[in-house]
Amino acid sequence: MKNTIQYLVIGITVLLIASCATKYKKREINETVMQEIYNEIKTPYKYGLVMVPTDNSYKMDCPSVFRKDGKWFMTYLIYDGRGYETWLAESNDLLHWNYLGKVMSFSQDESHWDVNQKAGYISLQDPTWGGSYEWQKYDDKYWMSYFGGNTKGYEAGILSIGMAYTKESPTKAHEFDRLPNPVLTPKDKDVRWWDNSTMYKNSVIEDKERLTGSKFIMYYNARGDSLNPAKGAERISMAVSNDMKNWKRYGDKTLINHHKGISGDAYIQRINDTWVMFYFGAFWRDWNQGAFNRFAVSNDLIHWNDWKGDNLIESSEPYDDMFAHKSFVVKHNGVVYHFYCAVNKAEQRGIAVATSKDLGKSETNFVAPPEKKAKK
Image (tube, rainbow, N blue to C red; front, side):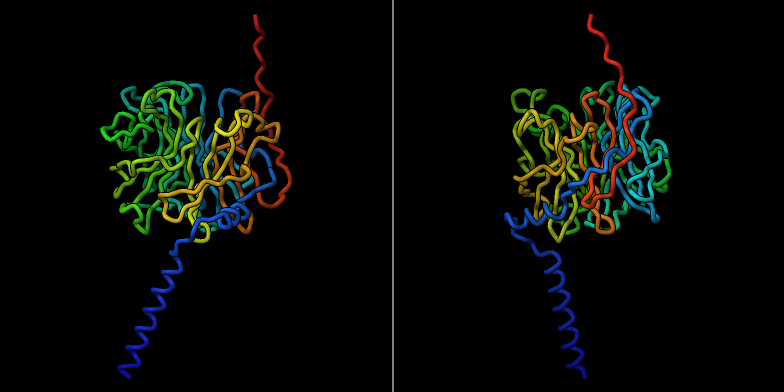
């Protein structure tokens, strides 16, 4: 009987080890895998605009979508001429959205480093493709990473990366608390040539397998150059942390780099045990293409294979005929929803969605564009 129990324990252990090995088995990232991923994530049907400004005094940008208590929620940015604030909306079906209010507002105290810019993005979301899309906690808090600054204007001045958090439900519009100082800046001692000018969107996930040796990874895009930082390209890089408060740059090169224009706004999902980075490009393939959404694939979160085929999203409709960019992609009930920032030639900016299944057409439209000023 004793031997039988021993063999049973050994057998279960072997099965568990085999199961884990299968779960985390690294796939060779070849053309077949890249095409498989593309076929899984492509969204050929543009449903249209789902969130638009009610007037031309402000613009919408950068959706981040999560699910809680059977509902969908979206954080997004509003630019009103002064800078970015972060807002919240809710939906029952991913297509029709209601505004809830702000989660990061302009500061009243002019001494704050981020007084005029607070562009937030949810951190530590369940990265499983078709999974819960739950906004997960760390240290009993919900976290947002954000880029901020004290200069007024559209992404103006020197922008740095900060961290915000709340212990309250993220489904209610309320002000998040913020760490008093940025966690990454273009003035840090360990600044690299690729982020020595200014910093932009950031996306934080948990590295459960500790592939980087740290608990958390932040993907961020920044502008920089070894000779002329302000004229450099934007590239995607990474930083790591063990406590969400203290961050250090990781590696000695960028992850996504097209040497000109913009590569930015990384968002990570795990599809069939393969990591997928959704991101946007601008002005590095063909200037006439404006801005468009792409993806890259990895088996270790560090080395990324760039897709060489068709764009996932590009300009094709009157509401996005200037830019179609900045991805946030979820799969729910067998349908892929690709949210993106749509910008038309009147420079109106809203949030649109494309899907893997034809769900019809949105009835939401931009308001009448602002009148062009007559040239004197």
